[in-house]
Amino acid sequence: MVFAIPYLFEDQATAWAVVDGPFFQEMAEDMRKTTGIRMLALGDNGIRHFTNSKRAIRTPDDMKGLKIRVMTGPIWSKLVESLGASPSPIPWTELPAALQQGVVDGQENGVTNILAASLYQSQKHISLDGHVYSWHAYLMNDKFFSGLTPEEQKVVLRGIQIAKWIHRGMTSAQDLNAPSILGGAGMEVTPLSLEQVSAFRAKAQPAVRAWVEEQVGKQWVEKLFKAIEDAKGK
Image 1 (cartoon, rainbow, N blue to C red):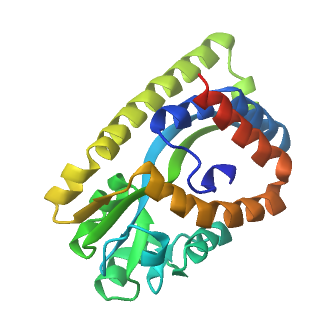
Image 2: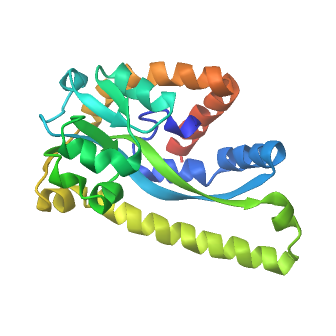
């Protein structure tokens, strides 16, 4: 949940450093103890951006009046509301039809999902605001993992590391080439500068951060922000 706080990372290198570092290890160990599930690694599902059928989005004010599809869960509605738009939770399987029929004006997703579901067919604009990095967790039952021999555990961990980096490589290639990929698909691509993104961060991050702190406590959120600052300093 803490990784869904918007506009955490200014670049991919910082994001990867955090999810491969001590913060991730501490979070994974806490999850193992409380749930019995081992989180062995995080693959990269891509950077999420806003798309819509109405206009280019360059500032938070451009979000006003738009009806945006969000995933189910209050945190995503908080994000969209904080930017002045109206959230509409819609299941993924119903999203293409909802966009085509004008039930909602837009949505937010990574390049991979936009291409896979052909969302570019009904979405004219994409703003590369990069509000959230999506992660794919590699999970395993702790009792099952502990029951493996040391050699078997090594094989599992090595395989997951290979899969993680292949996953990240494929996704990052699409993210880096988003303007040409989505532009070639007919979308009007609006890149945002760090200064422009900071305006979105100022609107969205405090509201969502406060909500996350209510759910998981300030400790984990503060640890995450410290990990980000530490990663920037390397």
